[in-house]
Length: 223
Image (cartoon, rainbow, N blue to C red; front, side, top):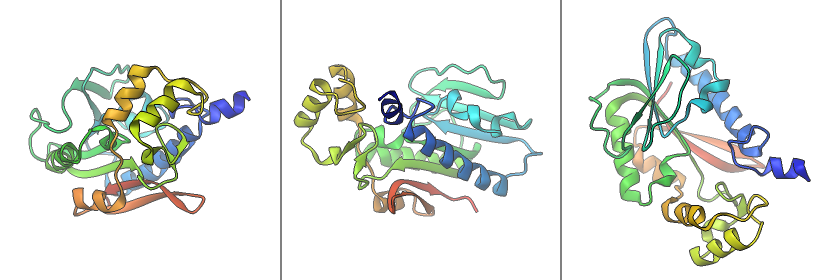
């Protein structure tokens, strides 16, 4: 039973299914990274909505010339000498100049911005401040909603989904705190492939597949 609970835990849990997909995604990203950047030169990376823990299994932060800036609404902790953190708004990166970063990275963040208008603002800012970008988000049409690990949860009325999250253990084998559940229901707006193409018009689309279906979508302009 513990194995099943671990498997369907949050992606932050190292033994979860989400963590395994994240690790596979990171390997694909690293291949593209080394194809596009010279590790002997200085490389400035902006991670929008990221954490230092995400980079623990990556070799990229250990490259001497790499500097990673984490941008969040709150200050993230980092002990890595090449990873710094700052407070900022993904929809208005007023502290950064045009093309200030060699690469902008974001993993499962853009779907948390409440509205398509805010998602559009984030996309514009990413393309303004970064020469290259790699932006991932769960696919709206994948049968298992990524945040709740529930089938077709994205199509349920929010009131019903709130009841299921807070009164049953169907989602990740736990009852959600009501405030946390409501926050997720308010902020999450899943995107599909056509919307990602609309937001990042010059991008290539990388599809993360499982059981023949697209689990997540990444828009990037790497070679």
